[in-house]
Length: 319
Image 1 (cartoon, rainbow, N blue to C red):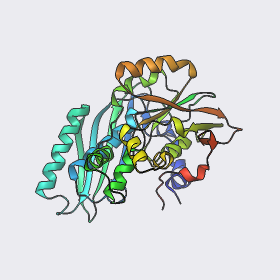
Image 2: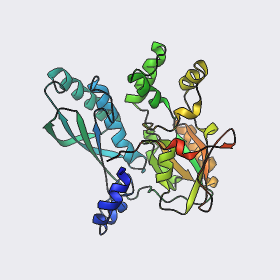
Image 3: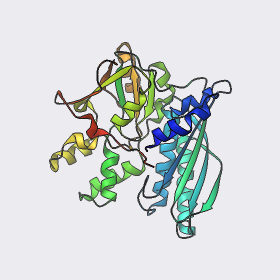
Image 4: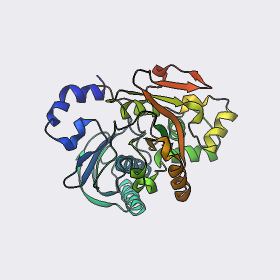
């Protein structure tokens, strides 16, 4: 059973009288009356990150992926709570100093405030982060409109290559190696755009489990479908260089997740506004597809040829 079936079968009904829970089908809890927005995420060693070799980098990754949940809703993250599990080896004085330094840097970078947490003993490292922000409104899932454009911020695919390098599944130059590993541990969040999203986005979420997988989740309660063109999905110059040098196919690097960019839809009438905001904020934003009627099947294309959707499932926790 995957995580979504588990939630729907055993827990969704428990949130029935709690509108802020969004039927457990969104990135955050939203109490409109109190303007409270909350997200919670857990990160486990060997699942969400490789061996705990670089504690400072792991903390960067888990903090950025956590606040990404609020950013993609158009909300400024303010406070965070962190719980950690590990043993004496994991949390040696040296590692604890590195963890503390990383948390301090991320706090300063994103103007966050550490507000509490917990620690427990465990053989494997695990972190749980709760992030809190305040807003009059959020950009929810399942609010796309027919004929909306589909957009992504930033570039897609760098993180996946970084993970393959960390797992010793490929060898490249030290310069590229350093770049892709950094993109895996320190995703370049589209932080500045959070307070502009409400001006144009109808629905949005961050890309964590994979572009196609997350696009499916974004409209999973609507009678709509999506069409995405792989040729339009933006990639970095370094990923493009790698693909050309090693004669690899772009399509195999775009759907594996950990990108932490924003996936959203907007009316075609907002195109000029989005271009203007993107230029002013120096934020890359790219149209990669459109929303179609529900009578049509979800479609992904490469060189204008339909591709098999089952090849692009992304990541899902299985129980």
